Image (tube, rainbow, N blue to C red; front, side, top):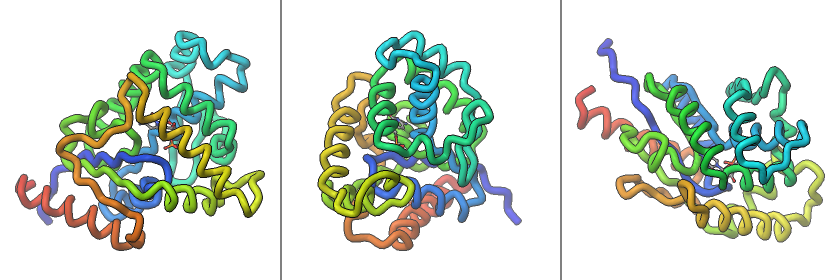
Length: 228
Ligand code: DC
């Protein structure tokens, strides 16, 4: 079998666009590592709250981000050995992670760590700034998007995010999502924006399978054109 070069695949986009599910499926198909960088921002926020660090104390949060031991697996996230898989998917951490993600010093620390994790290739890295800042020379750049209504509906129905929220929570989720989107898109430090050379895929009316197929077509196209 021909040994193919191991690519860096960047998947960015707002919450509820399908990044997690699609990135995981693409990584499994490619036999690549899936890295959820949002879990790192969430983990830093979780650890800061746990240690009583003021979230607005940027340098203290950055020190914590540099020291935290992340272990991000397919179905778990551990910080310093604690399984925080469920604890980082609460409404409180949604807001705290968005606050931490606005801080340039914290971002600089996590971006360096993400570069180190992906440098060898063979990764599907998902986030907000992977194709623009973390790996601007990524082999394949995808920007997933969907309508705000559809993203809120998905988030409200996501069991990982539903803890403590009633069945009529769509409006509440939509309001929180809108708030967080605004924070992600308007922050000075690597705001959420599609890279100029990213393929934008609108998943509003796409099945997961179809979206995964679309990404796989782009990856195969890249492999063919690079002849790697
Ligand atoms: O993808 P997520 O919802 O788990 O991300 C959590 C927060 O971290 C969210 O506010 C966006 C932010 N984030 C970021 O700024 N850059 C990334 N590469 C990943 C996430």
